[in-house]
Image 1 (cartoon, rainbow, N blue to C red):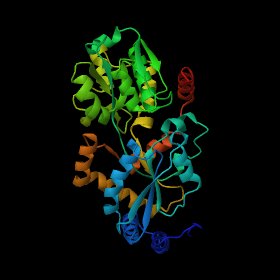
Image 2 (cartoon, one colour):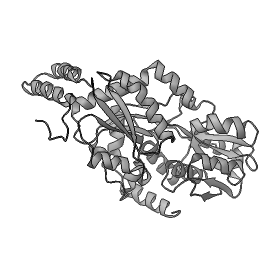
Image 3 (cartoon, helix red, strand yellow):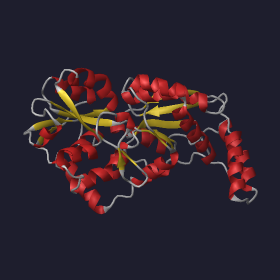
Image 4 (cartoon, one colour):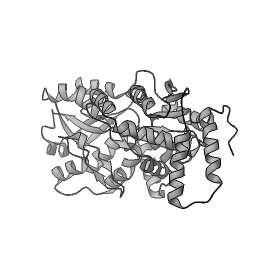
Length: 371
């Protein structure tokens, strides 16, 4: 009943005996749940090495996030295995997921921990061959982000609606910050020019500092550590909004970690005097959870045994509750990245492939306009 893995580890060997015992009888759900817990307890990573794959270059934000999390994760996995991080950048972040789907052994010893490629899945970009709906979701972290503007033309939030020719900078038309920023600005009816092609958030920030750009959507961590102490403290910029989280009903909610910065919905109502509406806002609301709620995702190769996945899921969640991890996260980001549980994460990953025709048409045309 085991798959023909390239390497059968003690983890899978232990799982095989436990799974055989479970299959031998037909029990009530309560008994099944108890036996599932016993099967998970039989999985031990003692003496094993887990390789964590990151689709970013060494020293990048995604790489540092994975390495910091890995240092705590190994303490919460039964048997406390060694975790090593391997970088597989390329393909705009899709190479690592393609590798996990097509090459990696499904033995519980190979896990991707990387910024997701949600928009690529929604748009059916040919470079992404991995299907996230077929890959077990282990756990995720949200990386909140926000928008700010220079104060030459925008002294107060309401000035955004009357300013002319503001320059919004980004990396790529399908990049998360670029797409969310454009949709928000268009929903508000702002007059702006989109300037793309910057290599990263730091390059956009430096262009804003030089006065070459006016608006940036960047990570909340970048704002707290780089933008707020400089441009905002100097009176050269003001915060606008943060992109909110999304609850189980698909409704946006403000993030506690973005204290002092209104959510987009709050900002819209503040400057327009009414709740947000219109086609661009509806598209923003639809795309937001799919590209923004899960930024750092831990995903296993398809076919990884369920009980091994359950152990990885529980240990991942245990890290997010660990005060030692939370303290290091506050030092690294200025706050604790909100966690995304396995159930919600699985739902979001599957929703990437349930795209209404009108949404697909709009997004493809909207992105093609600025490619």
